Image (cartoon, rainbow, N blue to C red):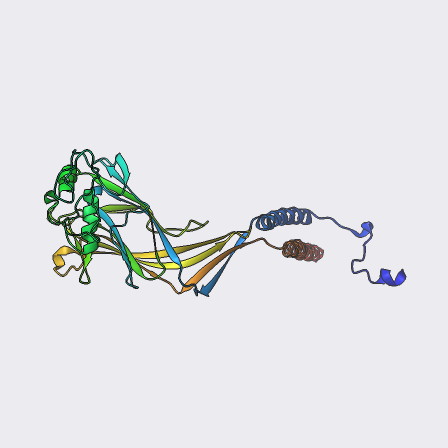
Length: 382
C-alpha cells in the first residue's frame, strides 16, 4: 500500500494552506462558463452527423442520365414547342413526348389547360379513308399517311400521326391544310388561336451518360441527310420570342445540400430572333446518409450565351439549348457519426486545457499582485 501511495501524482494539500482570492474566483467562474460552452458545442457535433467529401475518378459505364426540368415560355404557345435530345454517340430523339407535360398559360401566367402530348382529336364525322372514300358506319377507320406509310397496312388516324409519319421519313409538313386529318381537326386554326399564349413545359428525359444536348424549339423536328429541320416556320415566318424562365433543372435525384444554379433563372429576349444557349458541366455525385442509403445524382455548373440570328451564320433554329458535358471526377459525400472515443478525447482535452490555462493565468495574476504589493511595502519603508 505504501508503494501504491508513492505513485500518487496528485498529492493533497492541507486546507490550512489554501488561500482563496477574488481574482481566482473570477477566473474559475469564467473558465467554467467557457468549459460548458465548449462541452455543449462538442456534444452537438457528436449528436449530429458530419459529411466527409472525397474525389474519385468516375469509372461507371453504360448508365442513363435523368434530366428533370420545368421551364416556362411566356410568349411561345404549347402547340409549337417540341423537345429534342441528341448526344455525341449519334443517338437522337426528336419531338419527345413521353413523360413531358405542357400547360397553356394566358398573358398573366395563369394556367388555361394541362395536357400531355398532342393537341387535338377528330371532331368531324366521316373522315377520309385510306382508299379515298369517306368512312361508312360499318367500316373501321384507317386514314392515309399520304405516302409516309412504313408498311402497306399502316394507318394515320390523326394529324399528329401524319406529322409523326412525315418526321420519320424526314419530310416536312409544309401545308397541313392539305391533309384531311389536320383539316378536320382544325390544326392550323388551333395553332393560330393559341398565339399570344405562353406555355409551361415540365417532366423529364433519360439520355445516355455522354456529352450531348437537349433543346426546346418551335416546330416539330425531322432529320434528313445529316441535317435537322423544322416543319412549322410557316406559321410565324421564324419570328419567335424565346424569353423563358427555368423554374427547375436537375440532373438526377435530389440530395441534401444540392444547389442547382439555374433554378429560378429568367431571361427576357430584347431582340427579334436568336438562340439562347446554356453550357453545363455535370459532376457525378454519390451521397450516402448516416443510415447507409445511397443516392446517385449529379451537380452542375453553367455558363450562358445568346447567339443573335443577325450574325448570319446561325446553324440552329431559334430556341433554348442546353449543352451538357460530364466531368471525369466523381464527388462522394458520406455522412458519418463522430466516434464516442473521439468525443471523449475532445471533452478531456477541453476540460484539461481550460483547467491548465486558467491555472496559469491565476498564478500569473496572483504572483504579480504579490510582487507589486511587496514593492509598494518596500517603498513605504524607505
